[in-house]
Image 1 (cartoon, rainbow, N blue to C red):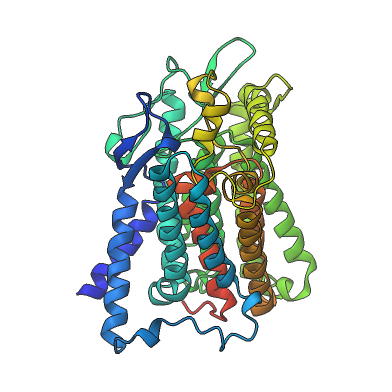
Image 2: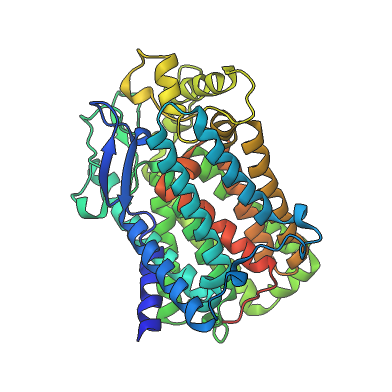
Length: 459
């Protein structure tokens, strides 16, 4: 009974990753700023419950002893090549950086959040995926993507929010300032789809992961191994769900992320066709038929969306130096690099307080973190924190490549998903500052570590 309850809570948690439902406990000053506040999200609560299941399960099957929790350096002959070493080092450096912060309360809260997501990463890679299964986990994410897709399409057609405040939907309409939008040549304001996330870029990132989960399930699940694609209701549902999700993905008008999907889609098709041991996997009649179905569905959605919203696409693709998003990104980057060289930075979570002190007369909406996770880490945790984090990513990636040897085509897909997330991180801060973005980042890192340990598809 408890095992079943734990399983359902885990799937609900994955489904709920894009939800912004939360309780705001504190914010500094009289005007609310997301990055000067303390909140508890519904996903935090679910994650806490899952951690308790994990802890009780461990205690029930292991004799309690301090030796069970030792991190034995002596037994780690190659300790400096272990990603967990650099992750722990990054946590320590981030804690030390708080001494330079202007707001100890916000910085300690952000450090606790970092610890939470580090534990989340360990929980996924060492426990959850093995117990609950990769396919079932990805199915829950895909279902969450479909749910968000329906919301996003309605929002885009209505050009406003639809009243899902209990899921954390942002209040959006054409009259509100600071809304993610763009203008047609006629002067008409077009609002991008939010779903239940705080920003269209966050929603687009979740869609990117959800679409990857669809590809993974559609090509590798045994559910699809005994019949031709589109031959029964299950396959029809999958393809329709994919088409709806892809259409909704385009309503976010997130240029960078949509480009990444298109580039990855084309590159993956080329690699599967050229690399011999990948080509064998899709060399069957059924495999070729599945690829054909995906290509047709994707092409149909692109043509449909392009024909319906041609003017919107052209307007969104037009970028010049006067584009506000371009100007702000440039400004934040210059500010992040303008500070003096520091080993420990200005303090984790302290970029906004530091920016307010340096530039006290900016518009309220302009007080945002630098839109680059590496510059943000350099600014807040210094060169030591940035180096530790990069070391963690590098050795995690090394373990994945060495552990899997990229033998399966889905190993290559996972690798490109990781690269895609890092690429997005050069243009946005969501993976370090927003609940949904953090969940996506550490989820993907957990998947890579799970496979680097030699775990394979068993479903």
